[in-house]
Amino acid sequence: MTETTMIDFDQLVETLRDHLDLSGDAVSHALMSLDGDRLATLTRNLDPDELVRMLEVAGIEANELPQDDLTSVFETLAEAVSEVLDEEGGRKPSAPDGRP
Image 1 (spheres, rainbow, N blue to C red):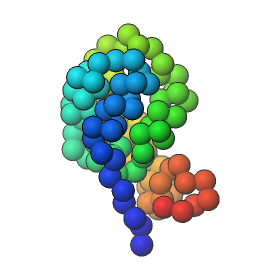
Image 2 (image 1 turned 90 degrees about the vertical axis):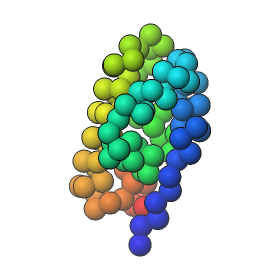
Image 3 (image 1 turned 45 degrees about the vertical axis):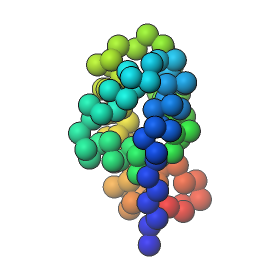
């Protein structure tokens, strides 16, 4: 049985705000602009630190990222996580030992 842990939205906003050096409102607005499925994919399958690591790997460090670009980045990450979950049979993409 796969355990699903939901990220606290405020914790996610705070972590991303600190990492991206953006206002909390900008991060919150970008996340809330995602459709429900994409937001759920991010909040159910990643913790904030995992999301930050994914942003770092993608080279997203700029603190001047336009709002629309930030939303697009989150959409792209959600799609990537969904694809990995489909390929891995529902396991979290960050579980190196195969545990959900």
